[in-house]
Amino acid sequence: MTTQTAPAMSGTIPPHIPKELVRDVDIFSIAPVDGDIHLGWHALHDGPDAIYTPRNGGHWIFTRAEDIHAIYRNHKDFSNEIVAVPPVVKSMRFAPAEVDPPELDQYRRALAPAFMPKSLARYEQIARDLAIELIEAFRAKGQCEFQADVARHLPIRVFLGMMDLPAEDAPHLMPTVEDQIRNPDPTALADSFQAMLDYLDSRIEDRRRNPGSDLITQIINSDIDGQKASREQVLSMSANLMFAGLDTVVAAMGFAMRFLATHPEHRQELRDHPEIIPDAVEELLRYHGITNLARVARHEVEVGDVTLGRGDLIVLATTLYGLDERRFPEPEKVDFRRADKAHLIFGSGVHRCLGSHLARTEMRVLLEEWFARIPEFTLVPGEDVKGVSGRNNSIEYVPLRWDAQGAEGGAHG
Image (cartoon, rainbow, N blue to C red; front, side, top):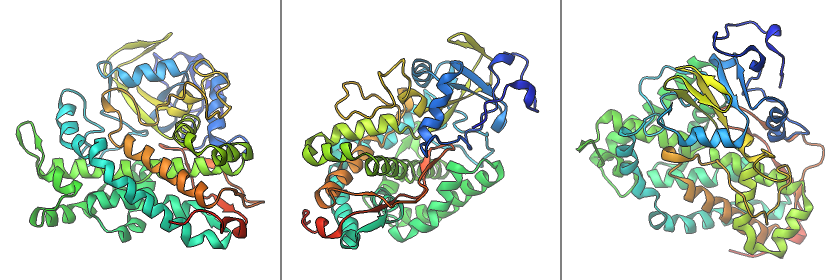
């Protein structure tokens, strides 16, 4: 990550931006510190509480938890009309992600029933059975590449099951999703969005003819503004869920396993006290912020000591919330027994993620079943395992190894 001051950069800086707050920061190329992308973001805490970068269309980054949380919760001054940088011209907007109140309420009401804990209860056992199946497939080998062998299967197959879409479609869908997360090229983003719409369109039409009990059928039957959801609204909601449901948990699982593989004392704690796994999930999410979503200022507005102009974009990096020493004592220290493990992985306010309960369940089930079967493991020595930044922080490759003989004594599903 470069943090050069304004004179070293080319590009237009809006006249209302204080020159002393301009930095050359590209959210797609944050430099990891010791392989840790989150510590790379954390380096921004050494600078001002707010910075402006001309990269990716130009946007603010607020570095402090108080401001990030306040913007998340303030839909009167900040709109979700643009939720990613650089801004992309798409054929339709994401709903509910790019919809503001009061219209937002109708979309959330349409989707919320499927994501209530009672509705999701049966998916815990589905996730558990799948976790056991995946782990048992390689346990005796003494090694795996966690992202390829687990993370890109478990949450994705559960979610595709909710949509009643074939698990075999995942390899086709993931490059489209990854473009949305990591590709800064607006043309590629528009193309990947259209590819998802094309994929969903025929499947939605088939579901109209052959309704089921799945999430797509529920969306088709939903009402928006007192009328049956239109074709465009059904497509928009379905695409929104697909992009949201196929990446964040994959990244969170990968970061969690990389951390545990390199911290023996934390592995020991979970082996000795599996009852604290739910607390461990929250603390791992606090440290490993994933999303770097955007908001747009509706009008001139003050945040802290700076004044934003109408139309200014703001990137809300959840890592900067979780690693803010003003918010958390010793934020770089992962402590499963920390009293305050608050995080913004799932957002806050009116746009809070509908799938948060499912994501937490999948993370918890994974750790429970992993430690029951492979209680001791490490990274494969000599491998370069590091996170990358973008609209989401992510990790591509987590090679793990363990004593296969020792793992044979673990639980059996």
